[in-house]
Image (cartoon, rainbow, N blue to C red; front, side, top):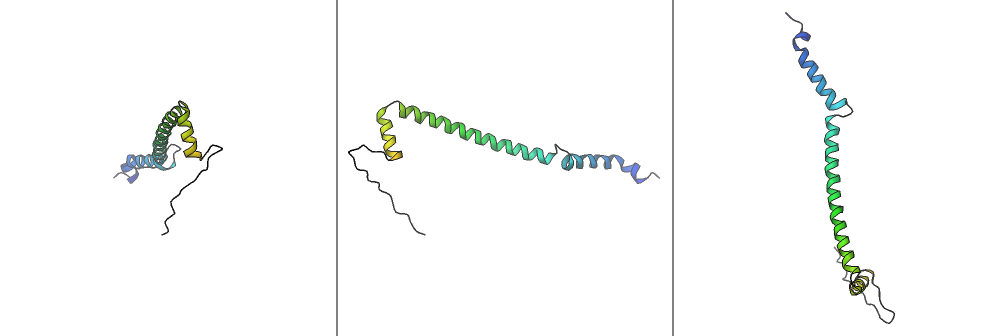
Amino acid sequence: MKKLWQKYKYWVIGLSAITWMTVFDGNNFIELIQLRSEVAELKEKRDYYQSEIILVRKTEKELFSNNRNLEKFAREKYLMKKDNEDLFIITEPKKED
């Protein structure tokens, strides 16, 4: 009768190799999965910022193509006014819970 080690040595070696690769190795599977999810998240952020850049460039082109658009933007966004004008800001009251 063979010893128990000789009978199951390939199983023991295989399981120990799989355990080593999943837990102890520097490039283990757990870290690989985490890095892949981080890469996917970073790609989503890159796509978002690229779309925002396109939107900002379009807005910039629209604003600087016409002085009337630039004046309208300055008045609405930054509440700018001419010297001989009065500016009234109307806001809605905040709702209390």
